[in-house]
Length: 251
Image (cartoon, rainbow, N blue to C red; front, side):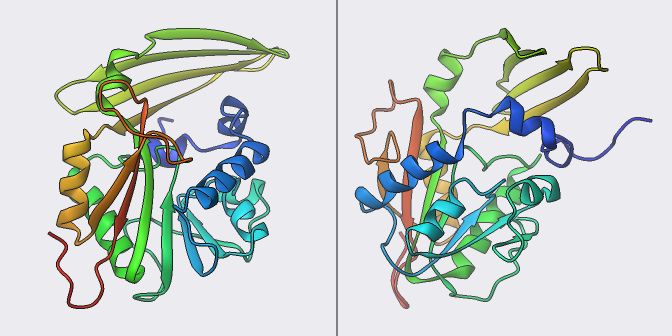
């Protein structure tokens, strides 16, 4: 029987953790330290890690003393991270927290742009705006469209301890999406196949989406450590957008 669920409900199973095992808790700790050291995250306060997965950043934020909670749609990833009581299972288009609760929201590792239409992406950012305190900030870490398309590797095959991992990648210019097909083949076991489809945003596009949601872009970096951003060479864009104080203007 064909699984008719959206890709983002099918892809984030236990195999996903093996495919991206280099995105480890150790790396998560390093990246949270970078965010704190660069002043992108506050040292104190409430933080929502939106699309937290198995919690590699969330748990490091909590260890650093932040009152951090996570949100993700994948029960498998939440369970794998042992995040009961630390995260909720929910859809980013309908964040189940009160208005103005958080000092900061993080959205890391290109976990924005999953939905099939831009109205849904606008709803995600509107929800972020709603749950932020006036003066609170969003830190969103996303691919830089120009460099991602230019450096896209069409296919790769990797052998790992009895596992064959094949991936093919293409860019759909009309939809502005990078589409990845993954074939996960454990030795002696049937293969599992899935695909990922992520909307790319140029810096100008992402700024428009954030502004439309009522957020004010205050900075853009190439890494979580605050390194300078260059549109023609930076692989990522780490954008800081603030919710204006009450009565402020987001334009």
